[in-house]
Amino acid sequence: MRRAILNATGFAAALFVLANAAPAFAEYGAFARDETSGKYGLSWNEANQKQAEDAAIKGCNTTGCKVVFKVGPKQCGAIAMTDDGKIWGGAVRPTKAAAELAAMQNCQKRTKVQCAVKGAECNR
Image (cartoon, rainbow, N blue to C red; front, top):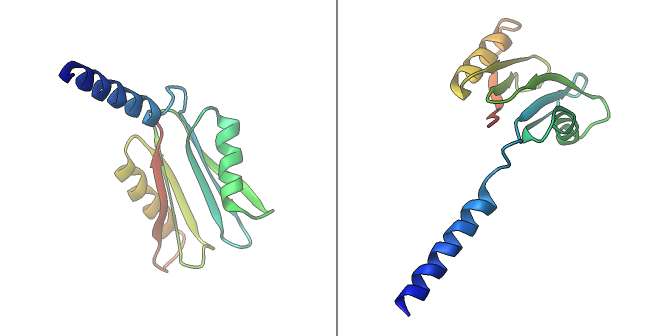
């Protein structure tokens, strides 16, 4: 009985790990933005670059959305914007913290108004 419980527990744990693991090929991301409205969308860990771009545009949810930068495998991307979304800065770096800092710096170079990181993610 005890052995059956241990086997069932091990099997359940293995299923949990497999169900929550991202596919090894999910390594692409993108950031999209609508110049007029300031809305944005982002994607990460997509199977290929086209899917990443499509997901970012869909997340932006406006007809004027265009991909503004792409994030490759094992890279992190971040986007920072002003509150109204009119001024922005983006960056791709090896770590999330470095991408966030660079995005903030890129945004602040373009305005005296305070920028804030609006999205940051890393691909596997």
